[in-house]
Structure formats: structure tokens, C-alpha cells
Length: 161
Image 1 (tube, rainbow, N blue to C red):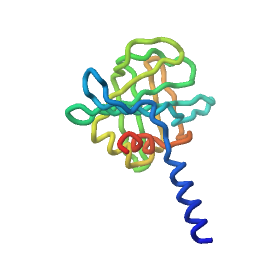
Image 2: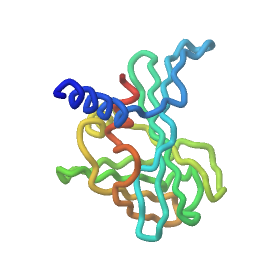
Image 3: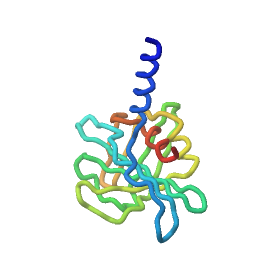
Image 4: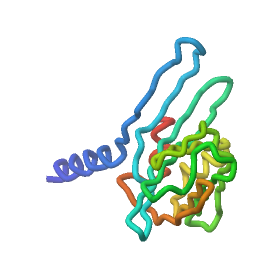
């Protein structure tokens, strides 16, 4: 009986942390190792909108990290907007703000913004739980409570496993 319970707990813990990678390959031209998670919901707002994110890691002369973000809210603006930002408020009260959207300009309602994450910021995101997220795409912002299948720190950890 003990073995059965232990086996079930192990299976559950493995299934809880099984985020899917959209990409895990070596680029033939550059030799860079690129790892990207699928897009997952990471936040929900009071207006029933959601916030989705995909984390990216590129290994070339060190590690480089990025987060791609898209909102299901009404149009907040365009990706590629230098006024765009995302703020991650951690449970310990610290905030990580990423700004200067690096994506090409796109004004579709489902445009994807992209932000560089420093190694220190990445370490904080993968080791601490979030309390709240604020996302601005130039024309306005929304606050999101944490929601979704995986926490942000679980997505970040998936890149380095």
C-alpha cells in the first residue's frame, strides 16, 4: 500500500511539472541552442481577459533569456512599442520590470510583445512565486492575478532542465 501511494505521488509530481517545449534545438547556421516553452496562461484579469507567456533561452557565449507575452484583453496597443512593459510583483514584495519591447511592430489585437530578461531577473523568476502581473502595450495596461496551468517559475525552470 505504501508503495502504491508513493508511486501515485511520484506520478502526480511528474505530471504537474511537465510543461511542453515548443522548441529545443541547435540552430544549424549559428550553432546557438534555443529552447522555448509553449504559450501558457499565467494571469487572469477581472474583465475575464488572460495573459499568456512563453519563455525563451538562447545559449551562445552564455545564457540569454526572453519572455514573449500576449494578452486576450482588448487592444492595449502594438507590440514593438518602446513604451510597453511588464511588471512581475513577487510574493516577497520585490518587483521585476521588463521594458522596451523588442518585437517587430504589430498592431493586431493579438500581437506578441517580447522582453529581455537579465540572468539575475531570470533567477528570481524561477525561484520565487508571483503575486501579481501588470502588462502595458503602449495604450493602456491591465493588472492580472496569477492563474493558469503553470506558475511562471515552473515555466522558467522548464528551460534549464
